[in-house]
Every structure is written in C-alpha cells, then in structure tokens.
Amino acid sequence: MSETKHIIIIGGGPAGYVGAIRAAQLGARVTLVERSPTLGGTCLNVGCIPTKALLASAGLLREIRGAGAFGLKTGEAGFDWAAVQQRKDRVVRKATAGVGMLLKKRGVTVVNGSARLVNNTTVQVTAPDGKTAELAGDFILIATGSEPIKLPIPGADHPRVIDSTGALSLAGVPRRFLIIGGGVIGCELADAYSAFGSQVTIVELMPQLIPGEDADAVRVLQAALAKRGVEVLLEHRVTAIVEKRQDTEVCVQGKDMAERRIEVDAVMVAAGRKASLAGLGLDAAGVRTERGLIAVDGRLATSVPGICAAGDCTGGGGWLLAHVASRQAEVAVENLLGHAAAMDYAAVPRCVYTHPEIASVGSLRPPEGEAPYLTGSFPFSASGKASCQGALEGFVKVVADPATHEVRGAVIAGAGATELIAELSLAVSLKARLEDVAGAIHAHPTLHESTLEAALAALGRPVHL
Image (cartoon, rainbow, N blue to C red; front, side, top):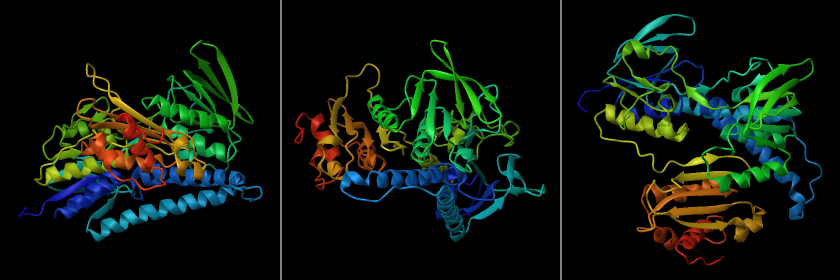
C-alpha cells in the first residue's frame, strides 16, 4: 500500500496482539489499547498458560508417585503449594513480558486504558487515572475477548465461590472442592487439584463431560478421573450454595429431582464464558450484535465499514480458543489492509490438557443425509512406545469420506494427544486422503505410529491389530 494506514486495536489478548503484529508486518502503524496492566489477555494471564503450568506440576507429581512401576525408588513424593504457585506465576510473567517485547520490536504503540468507540475511525480511551483522550485511525479491530459466566444460583456470591481465575491462585489446596461445570476448564482444574490431594466433585448438567466431544474419548478421561477419586455427577444441577461457619454446603439435584447436600471447602463455577462487550459503545457506533456476540462475516468485518472484530467477542466461529482468535485477527487485519483473506473453521484443533489428554479436529460425523464416514481406530494398548511409557490409556480415531478417502476429522485420547493432533489437523486442512497418511513413513517406536495404524484400519488393512 502506498499510504501508511493506522489501525487501532482494542484488546491485547491472543487476537489483539497477534493482529497488531500482523498489521505491523504489512506496514501499518498500530496502536493497541489494553485495559489490563499486563498484555496477553485471559489466555496468558488467567487461562491457558497458568492452567497448563499447574497441570504440568500435577502431572509430574503423578509420574513421580508412579515411579515404582518403572522399577524406581523415590520415596514419598510431596509438594510445596507456594512453590507450585510461584512457578506458575513465573511462567505467566515470562509469557506476558514476551508479548510486550514482540510488540515493541515491531513498533506497536501500547496504550493502557479502557476504549470506547466514538465512530468507525475514533476511540475514546480512559486511562487508569480517569483521564480521557481520543485516538483517531483509519481502521479499528475489536478484540476484547470473553469473561466467565455467572450463574443465577442462590448463594453464588459467597466468598468461597470462585471462578476459574480465582481457582488458579488459591492460597491453599482445598480439602473438598466442588466444580460446577464439566467442560474443558472444569475437567482440567479437577485433574490438577485431585493430584494435589483435593477430594473433587464435578457437577455437570449434561449427560456427558465436555459436551460435544467424542463420547469414546470422554469415557477414557472419565475412567481416569474416577480412578483418582474424582466424583462426577452427570445430569445434575446446583440449586443453592449455603455458607456455613466452617465450610460450604452445596445443594445438588439430579434429573430424578432427588436432592443431595455436599459439604465442601471451595466451589468453582466453570459454566462457560461470554463476550466482553460492556462499555465498548457498540450501539452508539452502530456495530451489530447477535446473541451477545459481535456479528462478523467470513472476513471478520462488522456491520460498520472500517471496523473488524476477532476472537471470543465474536464467538470465534463456534470455538472460544486462543489459536482461533489469533487466526481471526490475522484475517481481519489482512482484509482491512487490502489483502484477500477468509476464515476456514474446518480444521480447528481442540485440546483438553487433562491426564490423559483429549484432542480432536474436524468433524467426526457426516453431514445429515450423507453416507457414514470410514472410521479407523488404534488403541495405545497396542502401541510399543505407549507400553514403554506406561501410557496405555486411549486411542487414535480417524474418519474419512467413504468415496474419496479424504480425512474429515480425528480424535485422540491419551498421552501426548495435544501434540499428536497436529499431523491430523494438517491432513484435514490440506484435504489429505487416508492413503496420504498411511503412505507417509512414521518413525518407530513412537506414539504417532498410532496415527498411521488408525489410517490403515480405516482402509481395512491394519498391520498391528
């Protein structure tokens, strides 16, 4: 472009900062407005990164405690909760500082404050000290992310009731911990706290943990949680939370309407997230919303020319995931700066970082009216590398179009699933066939040989089954 354009980005999370970097790469002048004193948004500060740091400590603790199965003598393994928290905080600080460095090196101007739209080229920024100023640019990208949903449960405002942010920074490990919501966040934190000794109960309204995920994969996870003493109450709802002197009483009701009272030391609400739109001035600027989300098209354009939106505030195309938010932001700024780009949600990888992990990509079911997919599955119990690692739980499942053999989706449950899914994500994205996956030489012994075996199974010619 002959003329340098100025893009104002509202929000410094995975959509905002990646969008800023991409815009700078394309020659734009970029100003990023972030209301928090730290960059990185929910993901880096109170979401993906700190959760995975806690899970890493929890997983290593389990490995040490299970070292006897490998012929090792370690003595009784314990933990220092304060040190676990300090390590998590160091990981977070490194990640957020890294974002600041990346933006600085690319010449992005970062402004600390809350932004409100004035029109399609101007935002008003209110600094932490209350002073206001206006920023004018050529384009605006809204990337304000999401926030936890608060449930209208009597007693949910008690001090012992926290959200996922609070659960990441508890002063101590609760002896009895009840989690409302058995989605990804609920399961991950249940996994972590059970390793540190909490007696965990998950209350989930739906008939399955992680609703929408492959049922076979979820059964692998639920069986592992049960072995660790995690109680899972499916098709149950919390009707009230009663604060008592020493603990908290949670009233839980099953689908048979029978009520149960559970005494706990802490309650976490993990019932999903909603777009963070308050105070943005969307109505005044004419930006259309639908069902509490900013409405965008495939190019991430809003109803107002010159304003795009990306990330959780748009619903992420159905996926509130950091990597989707980042890609949306890239597409948004490329379009704003005159390049043609569009989102493709067909190959979005979805990861659950529990022990064992779950990862999936694409669609596991054919569109209504189409022939059933070819399906191939390979259990880790038949994998040599999994046997060496003592990680026999789970499987790799691949599905493909029956006529073309094009890989349409996959799910993996087991050790390393969130890393192993990359090959199948690429296969779905490139519209590779089962023959392409099966024809690629996979190293031996590895866990990813199971991907090869699953593809062979779908073709009806498995080797190691």
